[in-house]
Image (cartoon, rainbow, N blue to C red; front, side):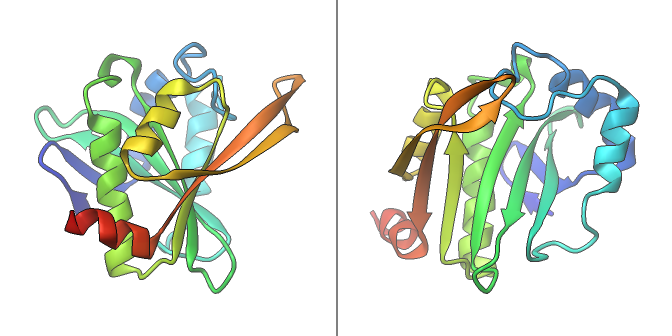
Length: 180
C-alpha cells in the first residue's frame, strides 16, 4: 500500500466493484479511456484478472485511490509492467468526475512514480495519451514527463483512427527534479 496526505493506494478488490463501476461507466468522464464498463459484472471480471503479484512482467496491475477523509474509492491507477528486464512501466490514471481538478491524480501519480523509481528501481516510466486529452497532457508535464513521440492515426479507437502521443520520464530525470 502507498500512502499520501489524502490518499491510500491499494490493490483493487472485489468489494470495489460498485465504486469502480460508478466512475468508470461515465462515458463523458472516460471518453479517452479504452475501457468503459457496461455493468458491475464486467468490472468484477476485470478485477479478477488483476495479477496477485505486484511488479509481474507483462501485466497490468490496478491500484484504487481511496480518499482518506471518507474511505471512498475515487479512482484508479493502472501500472503496465513491460518487458525489457521489467525495468519500464506504463502508467494511466482514471478519476471520478467529481474528484477531477482537485489534485488527486497528480498526488496519486507522483506517489506511484516515487515508489516505482525508488523502491523498484525502474529505469523509465511512460504514458500513452490522446493528443486531444489536454488535462492528461498537462498532468504529465507537471509531473516532469516530456513528449517523446507523436504517432499519427496509429490506434483504431472507438471506430476511428486516432493519434497517440507518448510521454516519458527516466529515473535519472526524476532524481534531478526531486533535488530542485
